[in-house]
Image 1 (tube, rainbow, N blue to C red):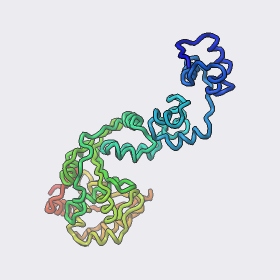
Image 2: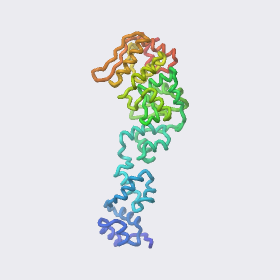
Image 3: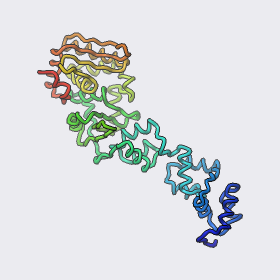
Image 4: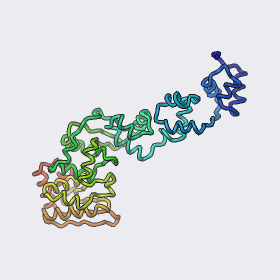
Length: 355
């Protein structure tokens, strides 16, 4: 085939007169035998001709089956007649590897996994996304990558029958996040509580937290990957990944909290995760989804057994479950017990209660 280095006016007119009525292969074979199919495609583009060449069923099927491959490979192995730009545009059109339309689920996966996951795991969690599109979306969301990715943690310490293990499980029950496939757990707080998060890191093992800024709000969070241990934790405490609406089984939690020290530890952790102590240190309130009323009632009954007191536990006018304790003396006793058990309590809450 003769190599051509320039296009004549006559050849350009051939393209303009025929590109809409026939495909490029026919155009090359019948009218422009001295040009390659690729060069004709390129000239159509240069001429600003915007005709969209229909995709065959076999081409679309090839894209659906192989969109996860690099565009160059798709072109080389399955659709050599198409340009890389055309292939990328069609993939986006079919929303197979769409960088413009991220689902809420994908964004949630990205936020929860991008800082600490290895790329191999990220690509499994986001199979429709390229590394480039993942980085681009993370940049838009202002999510950074941790400098200590892939570190092995001692998550199994959370399975121990010790006060501190139960304390942190109380925090996680109240304010933690457990991934749906049971591969990881996460806890995040405002930057004001960064020192407290470091205590969790020290308990779990050698790791550094990650900072994330969304708008004007700054967060600090840690995430641990260990499918074996996280699965055991979720089974031991009957934790649903949508625990906000689906609390643990009452009987299972009751059996776990028969020991007074372990109950106090988990209860104090739950307060640090999702409780509110008033400025004067005289009132404790916990507010959860209405489905948690039975668990809060269990907390009420167990606490009354240890420190006899009056606690209100009911569904409020908005349908939420409230736990209200109005007693500075009882709160002081709980705080003293937490110190006795050497729990890493959240100081900004408990310092409101003078010892």
